[in-house]
Length: 91
Image 1 (cartoon, rainbow, N blue to C red):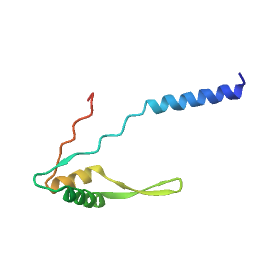
Image 2: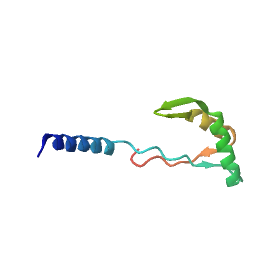
Image 3: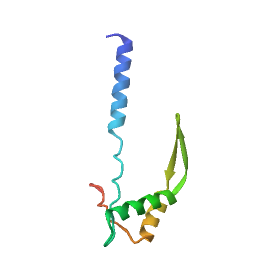
């Protein structure tokens, strides 16, 4: 086998191994409040998301706004919602 092909195979194997060790993202929070419509929940989530924006993150050719999750959760709590997201399996 040619050395270049062997190096390529080893590099691809290393990338695949590294990707498989990555933790899955946390689940989306599930918010609960008595007598609230789905539309009102989405409106409140959007408003809290806007209020929790703390800055921007620059990437290659991109500029993204980022949200502070602590501020977002505090905002939803102040509006009377409870986070009822089940804990991840294994924790």
